[in-house]
Image (cartoon, rainbow, N blue to C red):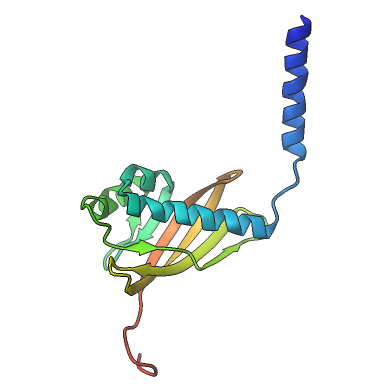
Length: 155
């Protein structure tokens, strides 16, 4: 083996070893990763980027989108949500305000407000994310819940 090939082989080996020995992320770091992923997911709506939206979906994603049966699978969710991306203005926006990650770092929960185009709170979302590979999170479950527009004490 030539010196050049040997140096490249050693460098690649050290890179693999270094990656394998890297310290696992803390729960706080994982929470930040999921929050950032949720924000990037939400940014697809603002950018009117349906393909970007679809890239965050797990193959077996389940979305509870309104009355009726849940949407099962990436293709069904993508097809149903395409209508939200067709107009020039986004029909709603969302952002996480709470994220939790299981100790194993493989599943996460995010929730937060959903706003109409004028900024009025119209709903809250709840999502379950699965870490597919280091740093890559895919949404597995999603559900929106209407918020009460009532006076304090009413239900």
